[in-house]
Length: 196
Image (cartoon, rainbow, N blue to C red; front, side, top):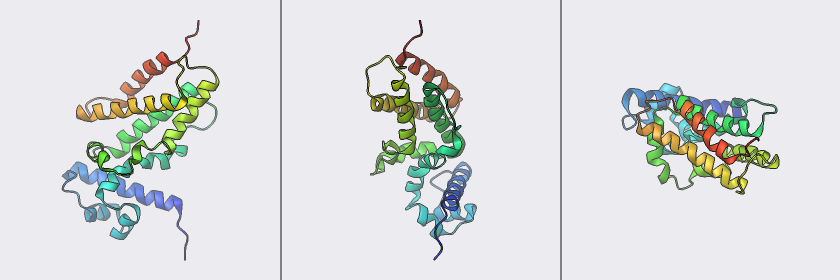
């Protein structure tokens, strides 16, 4: 029996997601069927169900695909911790804008129905990556506030999630990555030690 190839599995999941995005743009989510997604992605219905239990799970998993590409999508090597924090948060925001597109509004409508609350799980690679950089910043005494690394991480991720919701509410009418970056600079600046 052949072993599963993680790269091929990720490629299949990404193809299914991209097909769902394209069909949602063309027909709307309600009119997009699993069969049409599979036909567009050139995969079997069985392959769809191997990766996703339902259309709703496809939406719930859309954000988690970012975690699967996290190492490849972020620059490697040393980066100052405060820059690294912003980089992870903004790279995730850009991923949502560029990869998840019109599924975002559906995602937020369905996120509360996800019993696992997958997007908010602190064990997610995304959360853990932000937490790692926050801890590095605290180790270097860059934060001027007495909060735990977990609290700061939750605050920043919650803020970015709010930016994406606001972008959806404004019909995707502004550059959410640029706005989020400007506002993250304000928030992180307010949390950090000021150079004298």
